Image (cartoon, rainbow, N blue to C red; front, side, top):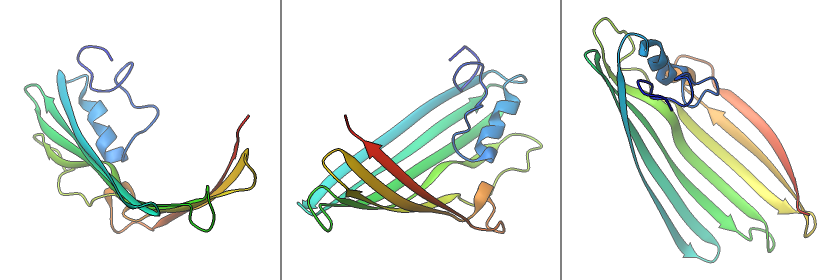
Amino acid sequence: YKPGDFAFGDGTTLSIVGTSIANTLNGFRDDFAVNANAYGIQTFFQFSPKVAMSGWVGLTDVRLIDGGDAEIWNYAVTLVFPDLGKEGNLGALIFGAQPTLRSLEVPGSNLENRDFSYHLEASYKFLVSDNISITPGVFWLPSLDQNSDSEDLFIWVVRTTFKF
């Protein structure tokens, strides 16, 4: 963090977090002093030993001093299924939105009223042994870059975890 920037380090988001539309606010950092306040709330509830739900909502309220205002929202709802299939395995479904620009009140900007950038994920961790687990998963990203006309993106992943 450095004064005048709302991101880490030099104020750029070289490790992009959220949509590129939300990250365009970095372009204003040389023209305006920037103030950002971030708020969030999380919850977790275990319905039974086999089903739990968690979720969160986050808001970053950005003020471009003498330039305008912006709101960046993110949220998710997660359903997890501990011991699905056998003890130690875990199934999960996640629906949410990565940090997404929802409001931009800057003179001359054409970025307001963009689509929400949704995210759907499914994964299943299964234990191979006490020290090794494999977690295949799929991510579905419709409305890429806050544009519902864009092609959907599917990302297939496999994570292998070794515990020593």
